Length: 371
Figure: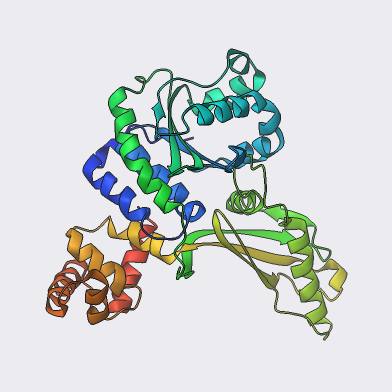
């Protein structure tokens, strides 16, 4: 698994802090922004892939989101995390209650010695290079929301008090980022992640690509080791329904279009089914099912804009223009004069070699896939 501790240092901390604050102001809600937010936090405080654990007002863990989770890890933790970390959950609940009046960061490991001696730790947790901990409590006034966990390997330097102070400054923004705007725009765009499976006439799986395995794992698990998993999603039922729809269509029977959508904390997943062969006997027919992953458009635009040599104001104007707003509307959103918005837009168009809002959006969204 690739770790970001070395490569993420190429991003200037000041720019990374700005990006964290901007992500938390999108109004998309915590689950939508959390994977991207964890990557950004690791750029502010160099660390390995991070984890966010959401909690209820009673300090009960609801779900955990891990940046770039390996499918095998999700599968295993969905089955074992509650038993493996039962004592850890008790420790976190006690920790939350003890620090119930302030935003606190702790550099001390919470993991018990018996966990570090377990097969779970040596075969699963240790290979992910989690040894040094930095834990930040996320709360909105008196209401607990969750914990940000940053990690470093045993061979890396432990977190210092300065790291704790840095994280503490950003935690109020993380708390705000957990909320959802009343007028939230639920526009989704293709993330570029695709996979495919092949099933028989009954919907039984006969082949799947590696990318499909990863996407199905994300679709199935609403969060790593979730106490309240998505549950309702079952790939086998989706495959059966789509394959059955194609069979009914082939037999001239009434059937819905062979397409389904599913949404959880990892984004939106679109499943489409096609006849793979022209077998005369429908019992021998094979079905190709494609899987497309989509993410919120605003999140992808913000990520893509970071890759271009634009000023802060040019990025702000482009953010709204790429969503279809006119320059006058963008000026109104940003509370600047229309002429000022036009100046920033013209400069950005020139730098990006774009001639209209559609080209601008296409370039930004395309670049987000490489960022």
